Image 1 (tube, rainbow, N blue to C red):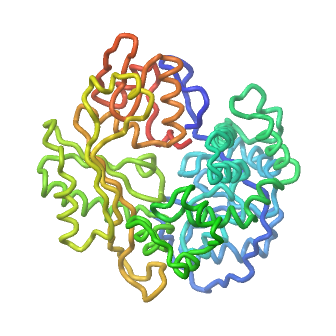
Image 2 (image 1 turned 90 degrees about the horizontal axis):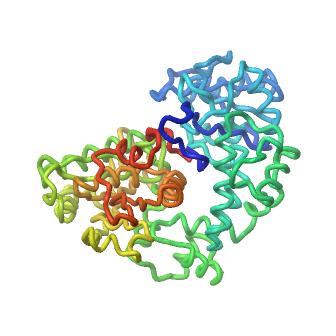
Image 3 (image 1 turned 180 degrees about the horizontal axis):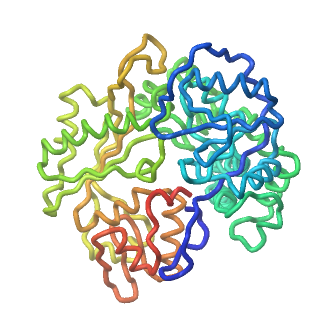
Length: 486
């Protein structure tokens, strides 16, 4: 779901996931990759199917790359069909890719999840080469698509502490992805929200030249690279990263050599950096779910454990795993996290943990104006890094192969009465939540957060037993989790 108009109940139906458009072609070459003569059956149970477009790639190169992908376990179709989930192109601009998509019977670039039966993702060859190098499908990043220029500028602004500018670029990128068809002309953006002059200029340049000089300059800058690396460390924010950069630090090696004093969280982030920067996969999620459920139910029989975040939205990859914990009997859930973490620690599964007590006050306190202005997400929670077993050894790391991986896991405890609001808030995405709360405030004059829905005029709370009820209170058609990827 992109931050465009939200769907009112009994209004226009039919919502399409935002179709990304491929970015400019990359000069990246796959010539250094070797192909085994033996083939293997596809390993990807998610149903991922590739189709490599021969135009501009060439017949022989397409055949070589298709063989390479099959040897690594990918399913590759030689003919385009509705079963294709990922379309790979080379030396193709955004406008050319859009025209190609239109020629395939109206097929458009689809969501970043690319599922069978829905529109495929249109991708630059860089995604393919990244996946071949990793030996598995890598998450689709902005640099693999047209919106990457805007997202790069948004990220750069955020790393400079300019949240307003960052939000503007991210909203423009989301609007671009939410178009019902491929973008071929700037005039298609007329009347759409969040596309200011700066963003329109970047989009125009991408359409005409296949690249953004401003975004390219940002990506190549020493500061951007260093700030991005440092802020990817668990526990490091923009202010700390900026301080390190000003001190002349550029790499993790610099941190170690200078003997920088780190917090306990940052020390864990550096220690497990290689694992934590590796995408969390569905197999990791299931492994985490098993150990978390076992520990929670041992401490609190009858508790409910619910997966949230991007994986609830249907994503195949993520950066961490989030769970909501509640109990039908309100109050029994309070204070359980220390015991849950002790249970996990006794099994040697805890690499880092920081538990935060519930500091959510009473409904009366929530009604105060000062409280209603923030998100008020003050649940009991634990930020942790868990040691997760993997089915086979060889996790990418410095040192000998091992059969486990460090994974970021957030556990959040919520009372049953607040669970629907917590589920909605913690499912995301961030853009979806921001726009839903903006709509609540501006259009419905209601305050929505992860704890409740409040009517400040009547000074009353609107109870809800499900997410569907929250949408009904707002006069909106229910939007399922898989359509909330902004």
